[in-house]
Image 1 (cartoon, rainbow, N blue to C red):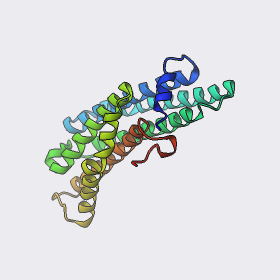
Image 2: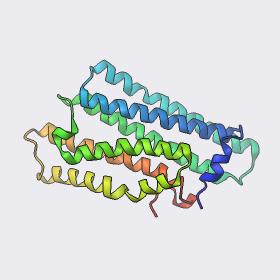
Image 3: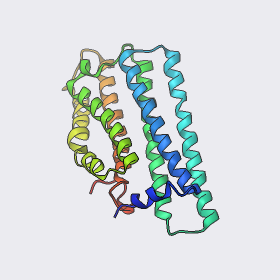
Length: 224
């Protein structure tokens, strides 16, 4: 049985663990905001100063993560109640995944900084555009599922994860490495492979977060 129903009860309790869960959701919202902006900058082009300013916002995600860790540890140190220990452990796992999404988002911003032209996914590959749109959608739906405790949304995201994301991304990367995909410009081919891989990894961490809604603690992060 998922531990998430117990977690939802905590949000209204007002204790440190409840506050930590609230901070984790705010962390996810911020991560989604930065991710969407990164995609926009990559596609539309922005000056270097604007992109670097957005990269620095990743520090805000790190602050949230540290705050969540501190509150979880303090909660158990003060209460010495281990009955809700799985809730705290799930939370610590979840904020790691959110932080990793932030890291891969910074990688996307590095592409925007270092590639000589804007990267409009559909101009590189129809498959890349499909992956890009899928991850954008999954991020939004993951937030929705967490906020509304919608297990049906979570199960659908998990059921379609490999079919709509990982297989396509892996195919792009392998085709670039084998030489099957050549775009007439080495930098474009490298950018295609990197972007496909960054999107896949963001999708993987979102999947881990989604599993919190439906999986027992020992299976969080895995599709059963």
